Structure formats: C-alpha cells, structure tokens
Image (cartoon, rainbow, N blue to C red):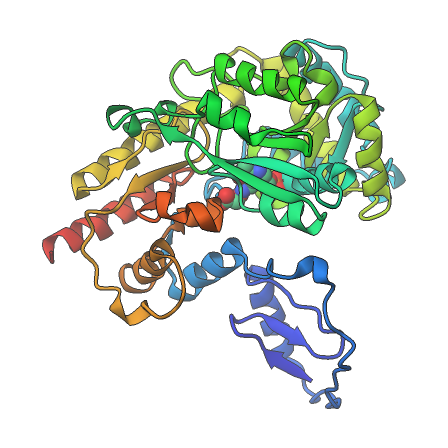
Amino acid sequence: MLQRGAYGSVNFAANRSLFAVSAFAARANCFLSSRKKPLKIQQKTMSSRFIPSKRYDGVDRNVWIEFTTLAAECKAVNLGQGFPDFSPPEHIKQALADVAAVDSVATYQYTRGVGHPRLVKTMSKLFSPLFGIEIDALKDILITIGGYGALYASISAFIEHEDEVIIVEPFFDCYEPMVKIAGGIPKFIPLKPKSKESAGTSAGWTLDRDELEKMFNKNTKAIIINTPNNPLGKVYSREELELIAEMCIKYDCLCISDEVYEWLLFEDNKHVRIASLPGMWDRTLTIGSAGKTFSVTGWKLGWAIGPSQLIKHLQTVWQNSVYTCPTPLQEAVARGFETEMSRMGTDESYFKILPEQLQAKRDRMVQVLKDFGLKPIIPQGGYFLIADISSLNVDLSDSKDSGDAWDYRLVKWLTRNKKLATIPTTAFYCKEHRHLTEKYIRFCFCKEDETIEKMEKILKEWSKSM
Ligand code: IK2
C-alpha cells in the first residue's frame, strides 16, 4: 500500500523506506499516478520489539529536514539551506559528462574503497604544500560521502563512552548528535563578541583563553572547530588557532577541524589549517567537501585528511559501514582538481572567482538587510551570515505553546507569511546556550542575484505595511 507522507514524500509501507522531498519525489509521484492496477494492500503490523536503539534517543529532530521541507511547501524564496542556486564551473560539469561518456568498466564499477586512486593522488599533490607536509595519497586521505561522512567516520572512530568532546559554538548541527550517538559527552563553549562595538563582524567573535582552558580536563578526547564557520562566517586567525593548538597539545587531545569552506574567504582573510601548525599534524583530522569546493553539494563527496595512524581507524569505520563512494563522481572531482591546479593563482581559478562573486553577494545582502532595519554580522568567509532581528515586531502568540525557541517560531512565521525561508540560529547552539542566539537568524547568500532581489522585494513590501 502506498501512502502520502506528511511532506509530500512517498511512504512505501512494504519496506518502510522514506524518500526525501525533492524533484525525485515529484517524479516518483508521476510514476505512481500512471500505475494502472491498484497495489495489493498489505496488513500493517508492528512488533513491540521494534524500538529504536537507545543511541538514537533525542536526536530525531533535524533542522535541514524541517526547514527545507517547509520552504518547499510554502514555495518560499529559499535563503535557508546552504547550496548555490547557480551552476557549478563548466569544467567540473564537463568532467562528469566526459566520465559518463566513456565505455569503461573502470568508471562504472566499484573503485578503491577508501578513495579512488586518481582522486587521492591529485589531492595529495594539491594539499601537501598547503599543509606543509608530504601527504601520502594512500594512507593519509579517506574519501567519504560528503563532509558529513568524514565527520561521522572521525567521531565514531575515536569517541568512546563518556569521552568529553569540546564543541565551539556556533557549530554545524550534526556534531552534537554524532558525539552523543558515539556515547561521548559534548561540552560547549561559545564564541562571543569581545565588545558591543566588535559584535558587527565575525572577526569580533572570539574564544576567551581562560574559559577555553577550563573546558579541558583528563577526560577530554577531542575538540571540534569549524573555519570558515557556518553560520557566523568567522575565519579563525593564526593566533586563535595557536591557542587551540596549545590546549590540544597540553591536554593530549584530537582536533577535528571542519574546513569545508576552505576556499571561500573575503577581503584579505587567510585560511590557516590548524594541522599545519607545529605539533598539530599528528593530532588533527581535517574535513573537506567537494560539494562546497565546486558548488556541487548534490554530489555529496568529501574527505578527511590526517596522519595515517589516525586515518587508518577512519578507514576501518568506512569499510564497515559505507565501504566506497561513487566512482564517476570521484573521477570527475579528481579531474576538477587537476584543472584547478593548472589555473591556481590565475584569474581563471574557481578558487578566486567564487569568493569574489560571493563577496559581492554578501555585500548586496548586507545592504538589503540594513535598509530593512536589521543588523547583519559581516562574515569573513563561507556562505552564510547571521543577522540580529530583535527589532522585528512580529506577533508570534499563535505558536507560543509549541515548545520551540523564539527563532524557530519566527523563521516558520517568515517562511509561511512572507515566503522567505531562512534558518534559526539556535540550531547551532546547545540547549543551555540558546538564549545567546535566539534573536538571530541565518541567511544564505550563495544565491543568484535574482534570488537576493526577490528577498529585497519581499522586505521592501513588508516595510511599506509596517
Ligand atoms: N560541515 C559544515 C560546516 C557544513 O556547513 C556542511 C554542509 N552544510 O550545509 C547545510 C547548511 O548549513 O545549510 C558540512 C560539514 C557537510 O558537508 P557535505 O554537504 O559535503 O556533507
């Protein structure tokens, strides 16, 4: 029996697999409605023993599923989830087309489980000088399904029952559930504006040395940082990373450094890899994403780079869970990196073109938000900015009993009533620290200029009616 899911997804009761809301679901609907014979109706039964593993207690809510679904349902202008609505560079599209056109077993079938040879070899050539160490293509890299896969492999390989893991806020939301599922205890420390004056740019949000040191103890196994940061856009300075490195070395901790926006820096900000600091290569796992690098988030290809003595344990997780990633995508990303290496430092380099484009989009969005009376925090890198929306006078009494944080209620209201989809920032903080951020929401600016214009139009219309 087929049932319509709550958000237009399709629920096959027979195998209970649930497909996400997407163009794919729309195609599935079309296929289903063209079916002539009704399907045989099966009796639905559920054994009382089928209760989910305790590991997954309390992690069933997901901000991307909730708000991407709502944006689609409301047909809102989507400044929510972080994906470009413009095309990726021609050469990466061509690379995949070329791979698909060749009649070759080598690209149709499984490739090396922990990373396609051409991709890891190319990455070792590209990244060795950037990390300041000879990266062994076969031992120091694991290719995964997106940055997500690399985070999952890193956390599950090393975090044990009751290990403490320091997470710097705001943090990409999956760190917390991944640590909890592994049995670890997340410990949160927020970046804070140094002063009221410095709060207007992401550079002004910093870690306090004493507060940071107090977080470490003999049970601390790892710290997770993210630079450039999602959602704040903070790019950690060398001095800030040196402080984190000092603590990691003093307390003998791992560092999981999420650098998926490594190429997206504005003005003269520089991306410093914490793994390149003295004493840090041997204790750092650096996470990357081809999706973010080449504006192909749907390809879901990522990696972890680190010393072989750490990466081999991530490889164990990978070979016992997913095993390998799609061969054609790995081959295309390898070719993409080869093209970019030949263009490095030139005006043709996508690593120069994309940040320049994004900086212009950021500036445009900042102006639109300021004109509307909000206070955006200017990001130094990445795809996102957060804006202080405490000046908004919206009646949210309808949702006051929902149990949701104020920003969740506001973002839902905005999506439904103004057709403008954004993301609540409390999703990037632990429950205890939500009060620090409830009056901010996140806007994604890796969007076509027309999309930002649509946002401007909505805000201007709204201004008139205020
Ligand atoms: N790490 C960070 C910091 C990310 O932002 C992401 C992807 N985020 O996209 C959703 C959003 O914030 O709107 C990842 C890891 C995961 O990367 P990938 O897409 O390669 O799995």
